[in-house]
Length: 62
Image 1 (spheres, helix red, strand yellow):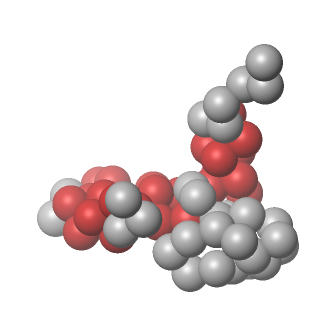
Image 2 (image 1 turned 180 degrees about the vertical axis):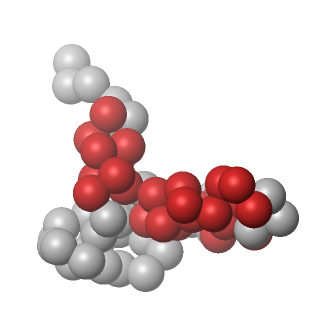
């Protein structure tokens, strides 16, 4: 399950016009506290677009 961002990147690498979204796809599960995946990035190195996707896809609280 935690490898799905890397599988997405592998698919996008085959499509030249989608290369600009590769960082978003790769890092959309990274977290500011470095508990994310696949690279355990912390804070500012996480691309802004990936941070936005992460927040917008979080499950809502009951």
